[in-house]
Length: 113
Image 1 (tube, rainbow, N blue to C red):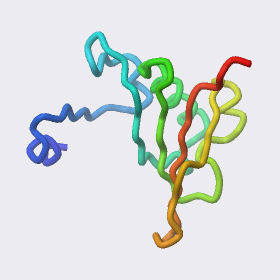
Image 2 (tube, rainbow, N blue to C red; image 1 turned 90 degrees about the horizontal axis):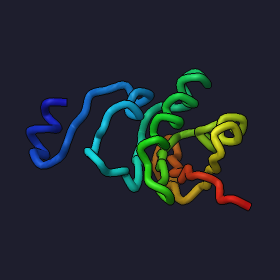
Image 3 (spheres, one colour; image 1 turned 45 degrees about the vertical axis):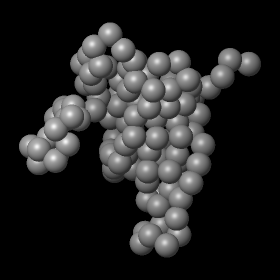
């Protein structure tokens, strides 16, 4: 973490549990427009994934999204978690050239119907 701070002195580098970010005022008085994540969600417990997403979405402004890159064949967030949090996951890109193939998902609040 220290090397990131030295390499990018204007960036704010936090070392914290992603599930706790909802209680940290990352941008004082502001909400984030996006979260970009490379967390290994597929290797985490369902409770941990749910806690991380719930926490991140408390800090995202309306219309904000959580972008997750993953190496799995489907959404990195199981449907029951998405439904319980009112979220949707959309595949927005990927590459077959990477080994293993990588994908990027946009996870966002579902629009009211």
